Structure formats: C-alpha cells, structure tokens
Amino acid sequence: MTESLLDDLQTSVAEAIAAVTDAADIDALADIERSSLGKKGFVVSAKKAVGTLDPELRKSTGQAINEAKVQLDEAIAARRSELGRSARSAQYEGERMDLTEVPAGASVGHAHIVTQTWDVLEDLFVGMGFRVVEGPHIETDWHNFDALNIPKGHPARDGFDTMYVNHGEPGSTLLRTHTSPVQIRTMLDQEPPIYVIAPGRVFRRDTADSTHMPVFHQIEGLVIDRNISLADLAGTIDAFVTAYFGAEVKSRLRPNYFPFTEPSAEFDIQRSDGSWLEMGGCGMVHPNVLRAGGIDPEEWSGFAFGFGIDRLALMKYGVDDLRDMFANDQRFLAQF
Ligand code: PHE
Image 1 (cartoon, protein in one colour):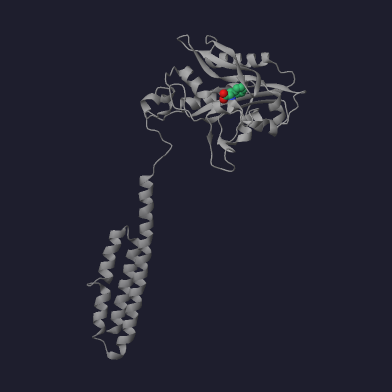
Image 2 (tube, protein in one colour; image 1 turned 90 degrees about the vertical axis):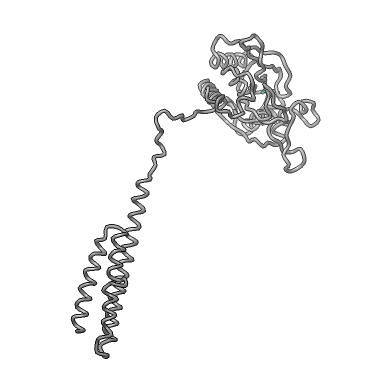
C-alpha cells in the first residue's frame, strides 16, 4: 500500500515536472499547478491516503509527500519567472519604436532664422580667413567697459542700458551689452596677428519694438596685424555685404563715435523702400584698447566691427518686425 502510494506519487511528480518544463505560457502552467497541487490534485489525495496507512509508516510517507510538493513548487516557480521574462521581452519587442524614423510627409522643423543667419555669417567669415571665438554672457565691468576705453563715469556708459548682476562689488558684474569684450579676451589670449569673429547673445535694458529687443545677437569682428588701415576695414565690410546680400544691396559707412575705435563709423544697409537700417558699428581699434589687451600700438594696428545678427536676418528674410522673430509662432517660423 505504502509502496504503491509512493510509486504513484513519484510518477505523477515526474510527469508534472515534465509538463511544467514544457508549459508554453503562464495559463498552461496554472493548469498544471491546479491539477497537481490544487484541492483535487494528486498531492492532496496522497496526503489524504496517508491516514489509511499503518501508524509507523505515516511519518516517513508524509515527509516524502512534502518533499515531492516542494520539488514541484520550485519547478513551477522557476518556469513562471522564465515565462514572465520572455513574455516581457516579447512585449518590449512588439512595442519597439524607431525613434530615427520620420513618417512620410511629417514636418521635421528647421533652424530658426537667427541661427541660420549666424551659421551663414560664420561660414562666410571663416571663408575669409577668420576664426570663430566666444566669450561669456556674464561679464566683468572691466571687460565690457574699462578695457574698451569706457572708464567709470564716461557718458558712453549711459548709452548701453546695462543690466547688472547681483554679484561681487555692486556694478562689477553685468550681462554683456555687446560682443566687444570678446575683443579684449582674445587679445589677452593670443598674440597678433589676430583674425577672429565672435558671434553671440547680448543684453540691454531696452523695450521691445520693431527694431529692438532686450536680448539680441551680435557678431563682433577683430583684426590685428601690421599695417592694417581703414581701407582694409571698408574692403572687409564690402566683401561681407556683397557675399551675404548680393551685389544689388547697398551699404554705407557713416562717421560716428565709439570710445573703443578711432576713427569710428556706423554701418547701414538700404532697405527695399530706400530707407537705411543701422546694422552696427566699426572702426580702427583705439590704442588704449590695444594696450588693455596687452598689445603694443606702435607695432600693431587693427580694426573691429560689431553688427546685429537679428537685423541682418530681418533684412534678408524681409521681416518687418523684430518681435515676430521671437514670438515662437509656428505660422511665422514655418515660412523660412
Ligand atoms: N560694440 C558696438 C555696439 O554694440 C559696436 C562696435 C563694435 C563698434 C566694434 C565699433 C567696433 O554698438
């Protein structure tokens, strides 16, 4: 009786384990679990049968049944986690997305016109032999003003509508009002000859209107070499305007004043309606600026310019109002 009970149990366990190993999915596994370990399963019936055995055999038989149950439990748990893992990876595989795939006809967007203009300007000046450099948005008062021949108390400071940063001595740190401090950083950083452009963002306490924004973009140019003259400056600007706008667009230099250049000029471009739009300033680098940059004005001379990138974009794309460029309206942006 005992022998046949244990034999039957062993056979049933072996069969159940084989079925567990072959179970194709979680549902099949649950069926096997029910039929073997469930209320009507063979483990329970074997336990019930123990009561009919001779008392001295009950204990050892009961133990054998328990061991069989544990064996089966473990096999089921192992198969369950295996099936879970492959079900998950099948699910992941099914839900895989190709993030590089662009549906036909979808709009992929494009660079903003200011960025496009910035890129074109870099290409253009690099083609002319300039190197691209950059400086920080948060500047010292010294780099932004003093070193550019605008000492404290100089009236030119008022014209810049500076935004100061609460850091260090009051008035010592600011958001750069122009890209010209990059002139100083470059001179302190490298020996002449210097041929660089420095495009970047600048900040002024200005009210937004059709030609002004409190945050805008300039491109600075700096050339320091031997025997550089005003003719080199005029020639460079002319070459740039022709390359950027084409030969039909007129530009002009008007005498002006900047503390950091002498002589200085303002640079305008003619709109299609005949009016002139101011693009920026330029001039021969002032000897005091060369000295602040550690360069001997007896040996070297140079020119500098600084133009508004946004205004160039405005002109190039025929936009009437600078504010439209920064309103992030898709209907506007998608045109370019
Ligand atoms: N930094 C001047 C401005 O922002 C432009 C300028 C640059 C003028 C270089 C002369 C030389 O108005």
